[in-house]
Length: 347
Image (cartoon, rainbow, N blue to C red; front, side):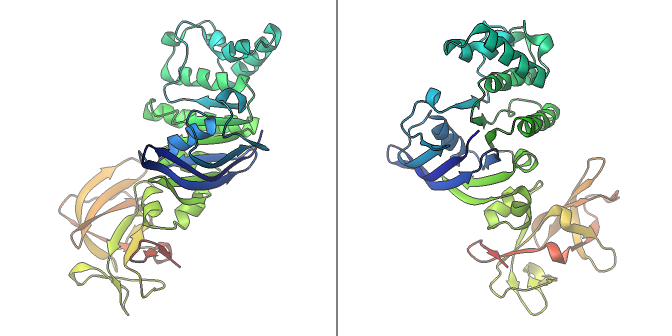
């Protein structure tokens, strides 16, 4: 195992700057997720750590070694790809042991390492099968097993669950997290899915347009987003935003509507409230027109219209309303977020 230090790393493709001098420290044994929208640079940064992309500027250290000029095979990392990258003509057992055979590792040692990884991932019944005979989840386990047998200092995952269906993604999220807790290997995991990031990571790195917007624990980013972008990206459904101004009575938005505030900031220009922090309030709530109702079983998602803008509310209660009807809702005043005109958090 090893720490990873990314120091002012930049990447150009010709004249296009895709990674803009990013820095982040990853502790030994930590599970860190790089998250952000498509094209933000997260996969490029991961490939630079792996040695699959050249580093234009800055420095990457794995353990006590600067690896900028080292080939991938010399970095002591193992990477799990989105498309599994299994050899179709090899069995599961052969796929898992292939990298060790290339290194000239003795057969007995290969068999021992493959058996160990197989036991961890529950692959014993599949050892003689070829990839075409496996489901998507089984192929992903084989790809993970191939990484485990190498006993690397760092695991790198590049959107490994994006090809799986929703139910299997939830299962594999749990398995990868359990695997990390068992092996304690430093792990860097790239995803565009913020739910994956929230549920799996010790630390999240939020990226946008080649920059790091915020680094912190999942709950830090959820409770104290640094700016409007992070606030809107972390959390599902996304945070509701309303533009307005602070007055003596609260936060004034369009149509003469004023939302109450627990504490005010004179320079606040945007108010944010998460869907789960809206509550039904038949007595003192703000009347909103219902646009749509989406029952999920345990919750009801309601899209409402306020001052010409759609807001989403998540309610644990069974909400008996139809589109076009009115619902009275109040925000949890302690959970309101305020941002200035530049989109930066206030308070």
